[in-house]
Length: 519
Image 1 (cartoon, rainbow, N blue to C red):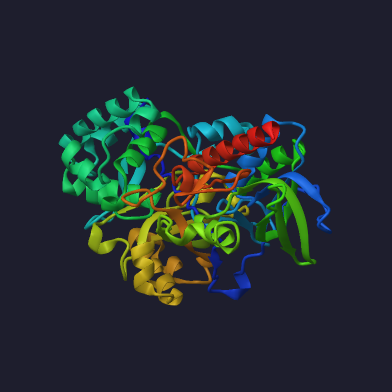
Image 2 (cartoon, one colour):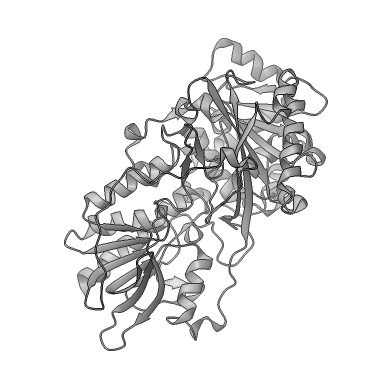
């Protein structure tokens, strides 16, 4: 295994609530297609309808919960309610009428995640891998610096790794103790290590230079966890380092939506009745028999359903709103605070082939804090998804993804026209041979802007934060015990990763199945 496998691409699976898509050119607006899957429906017409288990939320956690419950107890009647028209929650893709795949926020699939490996058929996803390594835009240099993987690449990559201007030779040597740590410790061991902020860990524990941190580690890790290094957990850093050291990073043929669609097919095949376009707007518990009454809203109106057990698989904020109305209205007077949320944005541009960079690799902004994640230098990282996975753009065209983090978005304060202009200027400086095309919005056409305000829950220095491998107790919510038969799941209940969302869902699904089996 090579230390540079982990930098093949940051695990930028941007967790989002319902994102805001704001194309600046209406003629290129996003067309959201219906899923090609056709779910079996349960009609919830009146209060006499009942199911054993109702899963509220069709994101990664909800789908994993439904699958786990159906596998653990095959005779259960299970319904899954998703308020959106498609499954996926924070892992979604839009398909434009002219053939582009736009993930809702730049996202990649980390193949080494253990719960992903348990739940998903990787072959069916038709994954295309990123090249190990990274390109880095350094200050005062025209060419993009190369960070290569000498252990997996060609003989040329040895020289590229040694001669790379990214980091000193001491920085490269100091990676060895980090590699040894993650290779010799289990994931459980990693989450038992002393915790500190990642910036302190990089500087004090591993003695990396400020230049190496600023030019490479900061844009890489902040692209993953969407906040400054001093607000990131060292345990989460070691975890993602291990995942990238052991495995590859890829894009599915139909975008990240393919992950949700496959889980949805799996759930449906197990007998779960999946309903999109239906949301639970209230929950009441019957004191007589302990069952739950849900009011369900859809375009057709409102309906009701009894459930013996409920799994709430929404964001923490949505779960809090749903529970505070009836179920925990008195108990939530003094709960633990809601976790703070990270914001991220993604600009997509369509352009004629060939792209400025033909390597299937991530490009990091290593120009320093003054020229990254700020106005007028908003870019943190850039990728050409269509170079990695050809299906992301129609033949003869390419797709460019530009990631912009929270600090920059605060400075632009909704001025998306200026944001687009400044991003183009920065891209033009990175690719001067294409500068004229980049600045011409009829050649580099903006396909969409996704602003995702609830992209990821905090995983450091907050009570109950999302940094627990194996997940938290799914019968507790914000420090309060839930009624018997009610469970919660989501990335905020485990780790702020795709793996955490799936892991938490599996925990809740198994717990619900056990409850129903014994009651």
